[in-house]
Image (cartoon, rainbow, N blue to C red; front, side, top):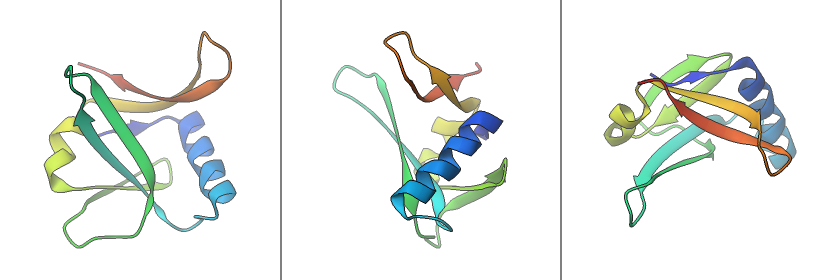
Length: 94
């Protein structure tokens, strides 16, 4: 299942604070765009009974069962980007 780096976990916590979502879980989802490129989404959400749930680096992560295979072998990190600044990135370990 997806692993969250320490840096990404810190930034998730700060994002939750700034959005007023402290105490909410991190929800992840996935879709492929028109050309088949992976588009990962993340936000804060309430629990749903059917959710796949796990904890990593102190973050409770939730996703709908149909997305479980899409998050195998992935790492969520927070990295500097060449254009300047930093952002969350999903790294595929396969």
